[in-house]
Each structure stands twice: as C-alpha cells, then as structure tokens.
Amino acid sequence: PTVESCTMKLLEEVGELMQLIGKGQGLSGESAAKTEKEIAYDMMQESFDAAQSAVTMAYTLAEKFGMLEWAIHDHERKLRERGYLK
Image (tube, rainbow, N blue to C red):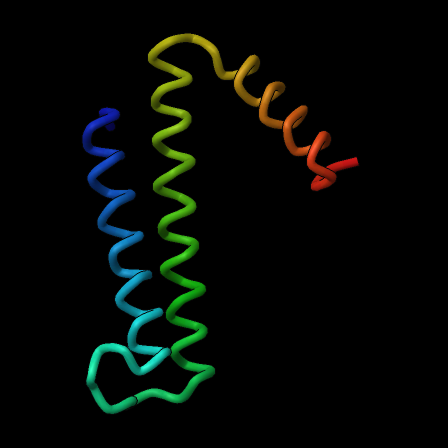
C-alpha cells in the first residue's frame, strides 16, 4: 500500500460511515429498512473498517520512514497525558 492509496481507502470508509450515520438519524430521506440496532451494528463495522484503514496508513508511513517504534512510543505518551492509558 502507498500513502495515497491508504488515504483514499480511509476517506472511502469514513464516507461510508457518514452515510450510515445520516441514515440512522433519518437525514437521508430514506425510510428505515433496518432497526436501530442493525444500523448501529453496520456503523460499528464501518468504524472498524475506517480504523483499520487508518492503522494501515500509519504503518505504511512508519515503515517508509523507519519510525515505527518512535511513533508508537510518542502516541502512547500522548494517550497517557490525556488519561486514556495509565
């Protein structure tokens, strides 16, 4: 994967997630053919797809520039500072 292809995939997945959010809120003008729980499940799946695309892009960049350990360490530090990790 390239940074460009990863970016395009990430945008695609975020777009699909946004479509589902719009449908879940009734913003699409479509009548809901799925239950709220089914829409939530679909949103969860698209969130996983978007997260995987973001991680793939991060690893692609880290591998290209040889900075994986540094990038992970710095991100963990940021998460600790914000209280997400102990």
